[in-house]
Amino acid sequence: MTGRRVGVLLCAPLLGACWHTDVRRTWPGHVDVRTPPDKVVVDAVDGIKDPGEQYLVFSPGVFGGGGVAIDSSGAARAAASLGAEASVHYGTRHSSHAEDDFLFYPERAYGLNAGWTLVNQDRAGPSVGYLEAQFFDELYGVAAGWAWDPTRAQSGPQATLFAGPLYARVLHIAGDGTDVTFGLFVKVPYSWVWAR
Image 1 (tube, rainbow, N blue to C red):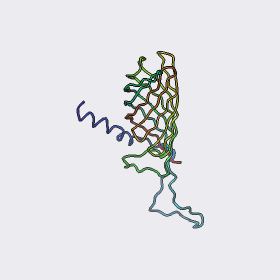
Image 2: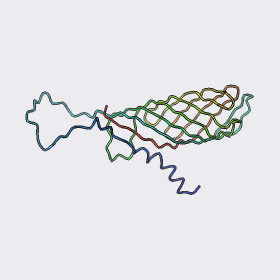
Image 3: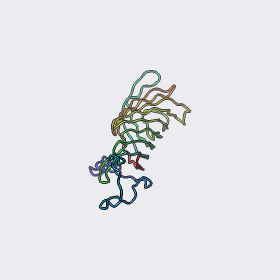
Image 4: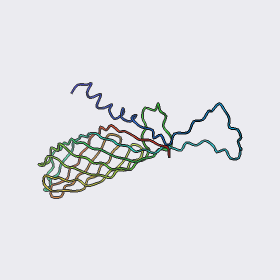
C-alpha cells in the first residue's frame, strides 16, 4: 500500500468529524442587532447562556486488528481480524460548536454498534456478526453485546474497550474458545446537530 493511501486512511476519521447538518428548527429568528428593542424591562432580561447541543450520529466504518485466540482446550495461537461496523449514537455537548470548528463530536453518547467480522483468521467459520450497546465519555468508552457465528450456529458475549480509534476486544464463543484482539477503527461519522 502506498504512503498516500495510508495517509488517506488515517485522515478519513478526522475529515468525517466535520460533516454535519444543523437542524433548522433550533435556529434563532431574524434579529437586527443594530436596532434595540422598543421597551426593555431590565429585571426581565436573562443572561446569555449557551444551551449546548444534541447529536444524532451515524458512523459507518471498518476495523482491523490482531491478538490471541484460545481454543476450548486452552491452546493459544495468533489471531487476526478485519471487519465492518456501523454505529448509531445519541449524544450531548455542553457548548455549541462553531461552524469553522474542524473537529466536534458529542462529549457523552449512548448508542448501538452492529458489525460483521469479514475475515477472522483463527476460526474455521468465515465470519462472526455482533450487536453491542455502547457508552462513551469524551474519547473513552465501552461496548458490550452478543456475537454469533451463523455457519456453526454458535454464539457468545463480546466486550470492547476503546480510546479514540484504538480498541481492545474480547469475544467468547461457547464451545469454541476466546479471542482477545487489539486494533484500529476507521469510521466516517455524519452528525445531525440541534440545540438542547
